[in-house]
Length: 510
Ligand code: FAD
Image 1: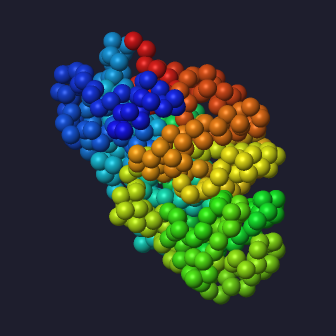
Image 2 (image 1 turned 135 degrees about the horizontal axis):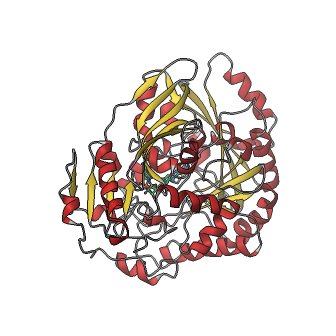
């Protein structure tokens, strides 16, 4: 089965998915624009792929900008053509989208990583760093550590760009305390769908600022961002403990996120019917007792793994960890503890990426599903989905951890469930190429659909994270009461629907 068979044959993948045969429709006037970088229509097939490796939309050209004005003049030019042109523009960060969100069918893809801008560090009471919208978080980590500083809120994986994660939310085990990455930004520079470069913050052009944060790339392209920093720890204690009872597990997770005197990172994993607990793509965890860990056998049961981290302070960490752990009710024999540098911990998924790349298992199909589930319905969800739908967790990690809604700024475009505590649940599956079995793309997509259908039918009040819908009605339901503001902002900042067509929220009118 080739890539296009997969695109067309599965019911999830709509007929709008095109093959790699797009015809160039770039107007000559665009090619004549004076740019510091360049526009190319050759060797651009990479821009029709992403990490999901399921959707493939061929653009007509890729812009490799060297300056912000390359981006603004390109968009302004397309804007000025108005409804006489159907050209769209997609910013492409690190293309770690899952369903073509950073692609533009026969449009222009902007390769944001080409926009090199120096990082500017400000120290003092409220330290921050100014970075390019196309900067990778891994580079920000390494540069800020040189100043003894680091961003407060992260994603689990750092080979993602600032513009890409700020267009969603950017969540990881620090979000319970600091909120998502979109809560830790002081200022943005944005090129709107009219081609205007606008600086925005809480106090300046606030409507655009909040619209762009979590705005799925709909209102503007982030060219620069001011990210809040904190003093960086040097080392971390990284701990995993296991539970066999879901209620005890979630009770402990909720207890931990409700206090200020707690761990610095709190996540969790579902493990079903598998041996070799550490034998997955988050296996960079290096326990004190590797033999015990590798011999661990879940014996057909569903287990829940609490993953917690304490930033290391040699003076008091050991005593404090003992005290914090003494409040928890995990299976006592399953305490796995590791000590690594802060940078090594934050870059943990990359370690696994390198191992998977070696085996040719990184560039496969990734039918991921990310959900946000209200606390009041998480037990029902777990009973049906983990208890009945899932037979094992061998296609990839399943993350589960609670966060506090009060830490999320509700003025941004990001939508969350309507409860103070909600759970992030991520099914991070990899499909084995050509498999028609349980680890094949078709089976995993069907399983995802079953989960989504169940959430809808049972009216669980679930919201997707890194959402993917194919009709405007579904988007309207996703945004709920925020839909009207979203539509108003679109007509204000990108009236011809030029930007981020791969999200399939609005269609460019001709
Ligand atoms: P892209 O895929 O390039 O773009 C995503 C969307 O943002 C597109 O619509 C694009 O047009 C738009 N966009 C890109 N750049 C800009 C810009 N400068 N201005 C405006 N719009 C822009 N998410 C989490 O929150 N937490 C995690 O722990 C996490 N881990 C992940 C691990 C892996 C291995 C992968 C593949 C994804 C993970 N994600 C996680 C999801 C990830 O945050 C999003 O998919 C994100 O969009 C990827 O960033 P990117 O730079 O690759 O964006």
